[in-house]
Image (tube, rainbow, N blue to C red; front, side):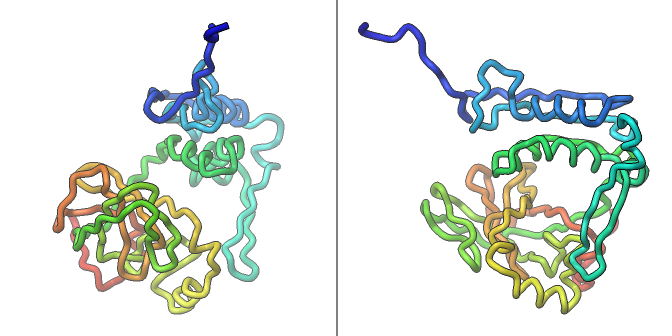
Length: 266
């Protein structure tokens, strides 16, 4: 037999075609809806499905506040979280979240059905659940590119070398960091001395954690590479036209931005 009559072809980033899927969650059962969404995100509904490749579609779910639970789960099911401080364990039911943060319920359900790997994190990033309460972001941080650096493949980035470039990379250095509110969450307030010390003393595991932060440069999103410093961070602009002095937008929570940063109301 000179040649095979069949061949197994795996999908890759160059051959994958992604679509946008809009799903109405009105009267949908959370578990069943989440399983369908996870299947679409993974790409299991496609003949070209490849387990180790991001080959799924983008999903937008509307009316997340109108989902249903079977049985008594609406009031009996409990979500548990911890603030990170002594006595900080908190409990909430699906009914509580559907009143104040409806998108959490579906995002939590879908996340539990995706792989616990970097691929799973990438898949979850293509799920969008708009806030049905109509809340919108009221602020962002604007800064400018102060320097561009071209790095070879295999170069370590950041204070701890937490990120290593996988190809020749161009980084844009920005004069902004966690003291400006970038990457600061409810459990970590960069304006308090206690949390600043805690951040400096955290283990390498926390430093190596993927932050998932991005910046908007010339209309395109660019990922943050390495650890966010106190007053500096680096954006990967390899595939984006960028020059020194270009404006960059970073998502922040306005209440955590240092009071020394000027506010502009538009």
